[in-house]
Image (cartoon, rainbow, N blue to C red; front, side, top):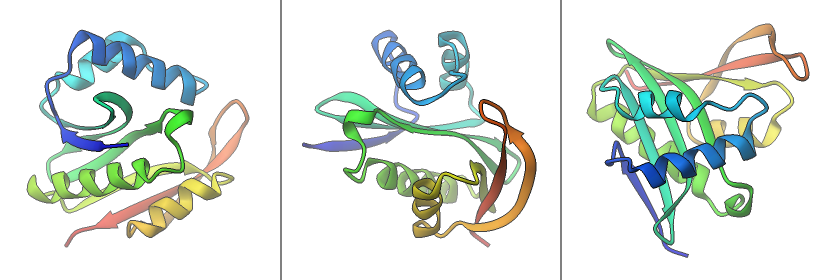
Length: 150
């Protein structure tokens, strides 16, 4: 399988449908097509896609504010998990963040999501705090994790 990563590549209508499929497969409260279209067209958002066999298999996005980056979602279709795609997405996002001159990237992750925490730690993120009862369905704490570039 050939995997390609692209930052802010022109998102087509077909790509938006695929992003919606990924959202539906990965999240209890998925973003809508309108929300995804807004992210893809926003110059302050870093959107990185992973294409496997030319179709989007996963993505990550981060909102930038001045020199700060806030990761919204990291998602890979279940059929493409455990193939290094999420790791590649995180590396591509970090490279794009450095190119934009960001000081850090930060995210929230469910306290019970040990595979995701391990992925983030592997990519240099460190725990920076905890948000009590941050998540619903089920209610759970979030661990804040940050990757500093400075």
